Image 1 (cartoon, rainbow, N blue to C red):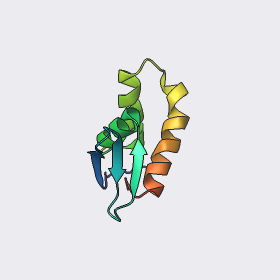
Image 2: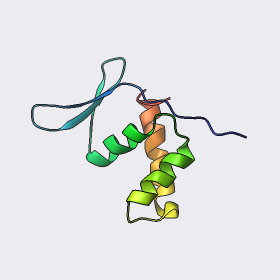
Image 3: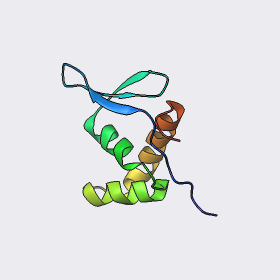
Image 4: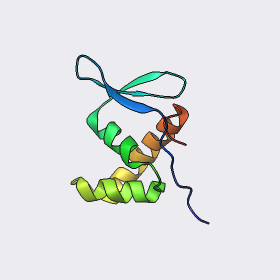
Amino acid sequence: MEEVRLKRRGNLFKDEDGTLVLVNDDNEAYKVDEVVAYIWSICDGKTETEVINEFASISETGIEEIKDPLLDLLKRLRAAALIE
């Protein structure tokens, strides 16, 4: 079965304090750190597996260590309507 390609939704902003904020299409804002912002930014057009592989390639961590936390993060981004 072919994996679904993720589609990024919403926008990333920096507030006046320099805090990163993701805002979905319903104008709901979520404070995020640089890692979450990066993962959200690479989601467009990639599958979950591709996102995991790309993040593993730039981090010092193995795929097995980051797979479950990353899948959980993607699930939360999807629930917040920031990816589909």
